Amino acid sequence: MQGFDLTESGSIYYSQVGSDGATLNICRAAGPGLNAQTDYMILKYFGHGTQIVAEEASDGKTYIWLNSNASVDKSGEYGDNWSVSRVEFVPGATSDAGYAGETFFLNKDGQYDQQVSIDFGARRLLIGSRRSGVRYFWIFDLDEALALPLKKMTATVTVGSAGSEPVTREIEARDLNDCRVLGGFSVPAGSDKENDVYSYSHQGHEVAGNYVYFYEGNAVETGADSFESKAYVTVFNYSGKIVVPRTEVAAVADKAGLAAAGLTTTGYAEGESLKVRDGKLYLGVACRDGSSGNRRANILVYDCVQGE
Image 1 (cartoon, helix red, strand yellow):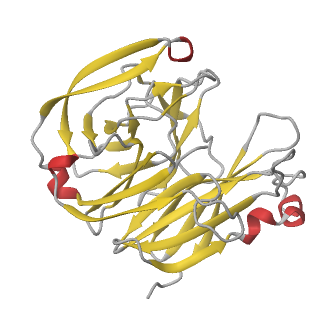
Image 2: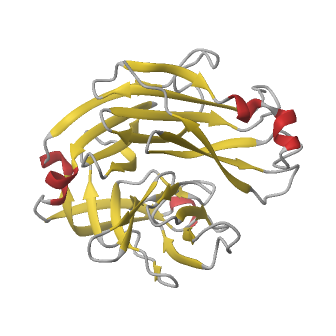
């Protein structure tokens, strides 16, 4: 699991990167005890799926918002995407264009790795992006973004073996650079893992009302930069002021507790996306044991702390 979302109907949608690095599986788990991969669609060359949003729309359809127009890296995995797309969830369908449905470009100063979050109740759209080691957060009015006119835009990506083939796509899309910005701020990478925000890997972000939640963490590492599994959440307002200080997710570092719960005996636990719903904070955590590539997807639930 990379990203996930919860819907009012009780479904959990989640993204899963395929073994080829190019495929992103979008799956629906309809409820407890049901097969978590019965309904899925396949999206190729879209990106890593760090963030997804499941929209149960008024037309009776479900749409998945996610990153799109990604490039391949030296390992063969697709990421560093240039846009987000709103794609109808159709079980059994496959798209290999790198984008589909309605596409939105942030189009701000070469910022890439664009990841989406939406608060439908507050009608807020958040796009998180990255450039030169800095994370950026842009908040828009969702309805204003949806009302933007379509225009021809281009995206140049690399595909093939380790990025050996540059491809330029001309796409009818919406340009968020033409949209009114309600708030925006940046977070530079930290160096002090004990104290600095964004000193571990970005694992997700969420807009909820007037706040932006930032999730960071890494699974247990050995070697020169060794550490136990760690995860932290920090809450900002729209101007970047911290309203709830960086708080450790104690369960992720609790090796004995993870083992007792049957999640992992090695302490391997990696944060994977987050959501805020009805006063609750949902944190994705992926666990695995030893050298096994199989991961167990878990969602931890907490009461939200109210900011100042």
